[in-house]
Image 1 (cartoon, helix red, strand yellow):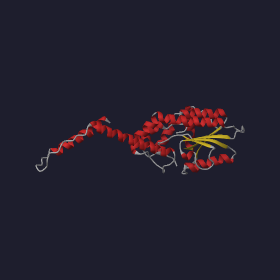
Image 2 (cartoon, rainbow, N blue to C red):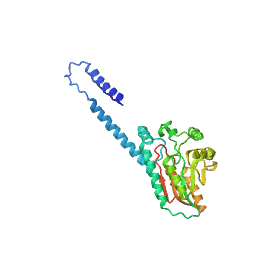
Image 3 (cartoon, rainbow, N blue to C red):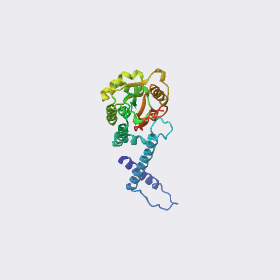
Image 4 (tube, rainbow, N blue to C red):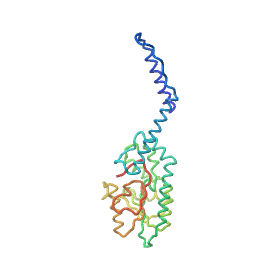
Length: 267
């Protein structure tokens, strides 16, 4: 940043002298006005603050589901998203969601008939794909399903720690846990391996997309699966997901908890 500021300053400085060097006898001499580096630094600081403000507003709109469908993060927000995802802000937001969900879960009186269900999404809800997105611009690159599948097949996604704590609490309270993910059925084995390695010890159902559901919007697919649960007599008391398509649609849970994710959008 310092190099860029100095470059602009000296470029401007050279520009002034190059014009003054052209002698014109019909013009009065002009005073040389040089902008101090402190003034340039102030302008840069104001620009940086404005970009941060705009990107904060953009992220708020993402989390509030106020934006039209989007494919990549804004170019100017790359640094902002990187700082958020790798800094304290993302961790604090995850902890907030997990804590609030845990408080809610403890207020519920379960029926004891084995029909009280909590649904969890997997990617960016239980498992973090941040190592993949660090290598792919934090969402600046258009999503490449082939490259992402290669990452999934490695089975190396770490647990999202606040979600793991919530998960264990939900288990201990006696809920049935259903995992409902947009991952393909062909990734069942590696998904089970990854979840187990990350510390998710047990669940009651793992629902993935089979060939019949490929091509359906996530909102439609997950609504259909929740409807099947309700038809089977289950009561969906809680639902945790990082996408609004995990939470909206038919047969919604009594309460839903949206985890932060400014890196990508799934309709």
